[in-house]
Length: 128
Image (cartoon, rainbow, N blue to C red; front, side, top):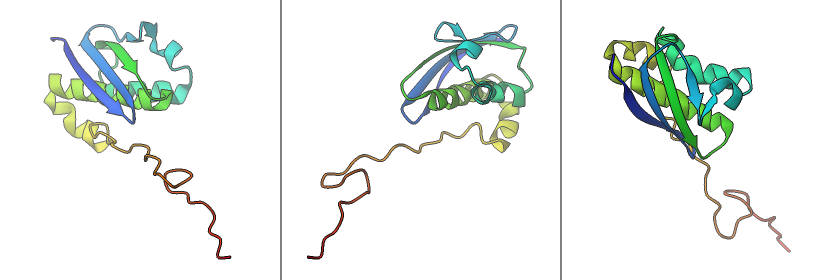
């Protein structure tokens, strides 16, 4: 097994990962992923791609992630790991695709428009 590096993005978060053969150690920005993502739902999101591909204990993952919030960062890491697994073994792609883990979620925050309070909210209309 060789190593591979890919990136994943979600909202404004960008995750660059280095995936190689190992024993299942995941480090995010120099910390263990359980320390960086303290809640169980976020930890589940990070390991979801590896568990669907049934290779949780086969790879070591080193992650550099920046931007966005913790949820966006976790989902960016999930996408990057899924892309790396597909690059190493294309046979896992259908299983990952069925769970929706290979698709980039391109929804972004809508920008604020001039003359509005927020992106869509308008000031109160006064007839008189």
